[in-house]
Amino acid sequence: ATVMAADGDGCLPLHLAAECGRKAVVRLLLQAGPGAAMVADADGQLPLHLAAECGHEAVVRLLLQAAPATVTVADAGGMLPLHWAAYKGREAVVRQLVEAAAAAAMAAGFRGRLPLHLAALQGNEAVVRLLLQAAPGAAMVADAGGRLPLHLAAECGHEEVVRLLLQAAPATVTAADAGGMLPLHWAAYKGRE
Image (cartoon, rainbow, N blue to C red; front, side, top):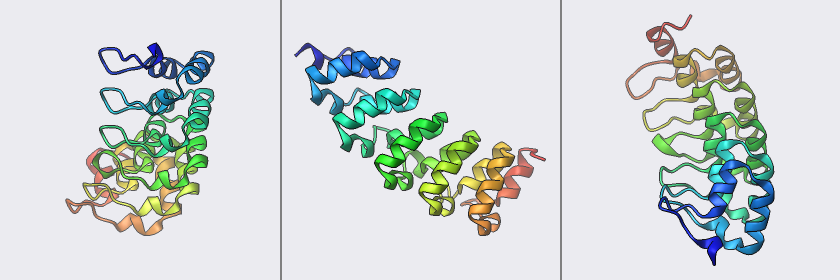
């Protein structure tokens, strides 16, 4: 019963242990209350969202074993655990989550962005590679602003990510976003050589 007690932010003890990467504590809490893995906090985040965002590979494994369906649960902002892991550049966790549910690589989250958009925005080459392997078509998907992952990588000056995205989808070099801007426009606007 106390394992299901929430604090003022709606967090159960499992949320806190998952966020901090406390594998042994997570294991004990899951044994005492396996349903805790499916409880969302005030932000709609499950313990898996927090563990994925923080890159706690062993905790992610335990949570996936306890509640496999949580891999495709979105938080209040529309983000799956894979979105958070991709955004934060958690390569090992991205690999785990893609292996658990490859379709999650094509899930649109906040602003209509796929995990690939977020990895491109952050310039994480290893995560971009993993996501392109899992979902090659993601390079051609526009977000809510009509921007492809290439637009974001070009705007932020992530040269190697731009190369990877162009190799995966060469035609995107001439794709305009909702404002009519090409990836080259974004690179020029931001002064990316």
